[in-house]
Length: 436
Ligand code: ATP
Ligand code: CA
Ligand code: CA
Image (tube, rainbow, N blue to C red; front, side, top):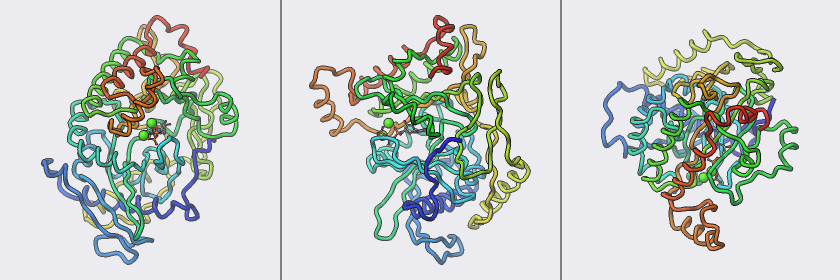
């Protein structure tokens, strides 16, 4: 099994923060879900709900381990957004708060953000910079509208925006979003692509060692991709759908003056099969199953403990019931049940949680892609402008990462369509995931 990150347990220095995040989500989401459905209003986009949680608890707030303050942003809007992305409220709370377990991915980017996986790896909590938070608040209506008009958007799916604050502590903003990579599949290649080449490289000499050490597949970058001459192999139908959606999503980001986003491309090869899955050893509740679409050569894993679907359904029902009664959701609604398969929907997430690679005649080939536009909350601002002037002064402007949003988006689209190949490289490209 891969080592995904550090389990955030009670001895972990960020345990209190993680605990408070989950307690806050649990309380605020169940509170909003408890209410009868109604139409969204303009005021809902501005609405904020602040509350304090303490160690004694009240009739409405659960007793918690710590005293802290929690702020929930536009809860009704996010209830609607979760609905649009077909996220069931009971399942959502179950994944995030059935047990207070998170896995910390450290700080994978250059930014100081922290990433936490929900216990079942379906969701990611990302702490965000105050400027990103401000940006999302300001453009929530645009985002909402975009999702409504583009149910198959590739842009990160944001399910909630919150803030925690410990007494005398600093304020931490965070979002909950979809994890593009499904926990039940081994990844045979993970790339973060921007369409720029300067500094866009994961050191090749560290790659072998990293993979051998049993850690989560490292995220490679543009230069590593180009060096391998890889392509996103989609037959005409999927290629059209992909580039068409990319066009619309990038136009949206350009209009909002966003830049610095990337296309995350992760891939799983059915030929190489499933040995490990994305799994935390210490959980010991699940071993991945072999691919259903498995081809010769794959080593099937075994199911250590068969999760009972009935038991899972019962717990989800319990959660829904207590939401209806506007009661604090019971803490003991805990379960060890992990999802066996991705149950995602939408054009790009429907085949085993992703989109199947296809040949020039649209027949499926042996790879599945997990695609999404991530890190889309950075607005082009004075800091980026200075970075642009500084980096651009060496005469290599189109290659550098901080470009004004219009040009950033155009270069991004150009690069992605260049590496998305249909018919002409089908034969050559078929190697891609096997060799990645
Ligand atoms: P920086 O600003 O330095 O690029 P960041 O802290 O804003 O970094 P991101 O770019 O959002 O971080 O993400 C860093 C890495 O985390 C990605 O390259 C990817 O490997 C992983 N990651 C981010 N978002 C997701 C997601 N939704 N699903 C799966 N993996 C993700
Ligand atoms: Ca990034
Ligand atoms: Ca970032």
